[in-house]
Structures are given as C-alpha cells and as structure tokens.
Length: 325
Image 1 (cartoon, rainbow, N blue to C red):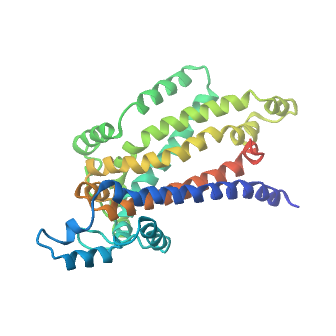
Image 2 (cartoon, rainbow, N blue to C red):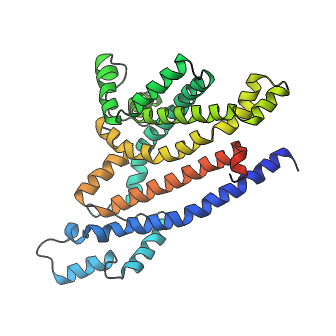
C-alpha cells in the first residue's frame, strides 16, 4: 500500500466520525428551528387574513400551512421538504424562501469567505512570525496587537474603516454591492472593507493559537530527534513543526465560521449590503417565521459542512488527529 493510500485511510475514519456526529446535530437543530413558530406564537393567519376573516377562510389557511396537523407531523412534513431543498414560502408575500436566500446568499458568503481568507492569511503570517521570533520584541508586539484587535467590535472597526478609507482617502466605496459577474473589480472593492472589519478577530485568534501550537511543537522530542539527524531548520519547520502545531489554529477556525456568519448581519447593515443576514433580521422583526427558519437551516448546513472540511484537513495534516488523540 502506498503512502498516499495509507494517509487516505487515516483521514476517512475521522471524516466519517464527524459526519455521523453531524447528522443528529442537524436533526436536533432542525427540530429547534421548527419549534420557533410554536415558541413565538406567531402564525400566518396574521399575514393572510384580516380581522373580518370568515371561519372558512381561516380553516383554508390553516390547512394550506399544515396548522391543522399535530406538531410532530408538521415537523416531519417540513423536514421532508427541507431535505428536498424546499424551505417554504414567506408569510408576508408568498415568495419562495429558497429562491430569496439563493439571491441573497452570494452577498453574505462573499463577505464571509473573504473575511475567512484574510483571517487565515493574516493570522498564519502573524502567528508564524511570533513563533519563530518567540521571546523577542516582535513576539511581544504581535501578542499586544492581537489582544487589542480581538477586543474591538466589528461594527466599530467598520465605522473607522469607512471614515478613513472611504470618506478620508476615498480608496474604497462606503457601501453598496455589485455582483461579481457584472464587474469583478467593483465587487472586490465593495466587499473588501466589510471583510476586513469582520476578519480582525479571526486574525487575532488564529495568530495566537498558531503561535502556541508551533512553540509547543518545537519543544517536542521529535524536533530534537530531527535536529540530531541533521535536518535543516526549514525542513523541520515545514515537515514536522507546522503539521503538528497547526491543530489548535484549525480548531479555532472551525469555531470562528459561525461567528463570521453571524457578524455579517451587523456588517451588512453598516455597509448597506443587501445580504441574507440583514434580510433575515428584517424578517424576524416582521414576524415572518419561514424566512427566519430558512436562513437558520441554511446557516446550520454551511457550518456543519465547513466543520466537516476543517476536520478532514485536521485529520489529513496532523498525525495526532489520525491517531484519535
């Protein structure tokens, strides 16, 4: 068996284990999400029928939305539709929630994933720099900078970025959105400031965790053994230290993704971006439960898939994870 095949066999059990754990998490999350309607006490009757509605009209609406069925039956019917990609209809205007989210999602996901890229690149660079210069003024400067940055709310950073780079230097637009297929340059210009505002906390957390993991890896016995065998410092770093020290940073990255998705709601409002985050917040204020449910399901699926990918990378890169440690 080749080394590549052995690595694949080492990764597969970890991925399957995470997938099996994700399934009950998804089912529980969908149950809680569907229960929002019962907990809120809101029904589509408030949107469809008026004060003078006849009993026949009320019965028709209840039948259309399945309100005449027991809760568990309503949930199973709704879950079956969700698994087919049907997130229902908005109570306010009857539009398909799936279609609405499909239109809004590219905006929010553009910001979220660009912020993720900035967080990974910036955090990796700072964490690696601090670890390689541990104990020096550079290490202390990175530690102080990441501590300050992580304490700054994204909406404050967003306002500062608009004031400095949009109003002051006029390097970026202060808001609005242009689709990538219409103008890639304008698209990038409009998501850059929101992504930076959203990414700084991720940069700080990845930098701290990566520094800690690399410093701990350098203190391990296998690094001493590698030096005794005459391996160069660069080979020790890239072959041994990074593979074993990246675990804490990857774990944090998996936990930061939900934060980025949630933070996009505030960022979109500051930069006037018509993403699904601000759309969902508006629907929640109006009591349009199917839209909120659909957005939550969409976010849950994204988070579970992203964490599955992170765990696959973690199992692929780190020997400790492959051993189930």
